[in-house]
Length: 256
Image (cartoon, rainbow, N blue to C red; front, side):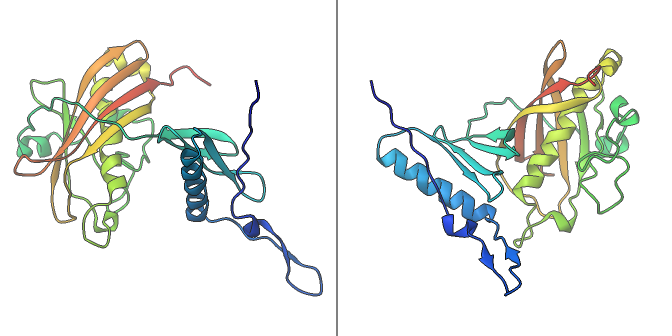
């Protein structure tokens, strides 16, 4: 049996030093992330055409990982060779709940138990220490006669792209942190704080403009030991869905 090892080198010229002056000052060019991703994609496509399933890694001139692409369609975020996150395309099947009354939602803003004991008060999404115009400032409150939580959100113009719509990454963020609150609402869940996101699957169904107020609703799906699964959705005033998500959370309580 024989095996072949494939080594993919990209943008070699970008790594070559150049002498800047007669004093032999060494200038090193760095590989831009877009260029690294383009090189990795080209290498992956060529390997597929040749019938090989591979993982392509592009390193910078210091040996640090810039991009990792897998043939299963996933993408990896790494720092110094350590994978921090991985993303891939997936379908989201989620039965939605009806949004509560907006006026009642406004009246209960920030009333969740975990808002009062917030372990990350400067959280970009739901941190109570964030000033107006800084972060998303989504403060979930209790929904009457329900195990769900809800909040109104009018996004700041700084979160929008050139078209005036909230950028997709901020819609993702809006569904992220608030989904932990229904898992932490029971008094018995206090021992699980803090919880951090382990996995999230998001579907973007529409757009949101800076001058619109959306209603965010989050509710628990399952709890098991130190883990919990919750759902979240963003609604327009007319009840149409902007985005929805299912998130898995894990407790860090007791971990150094």
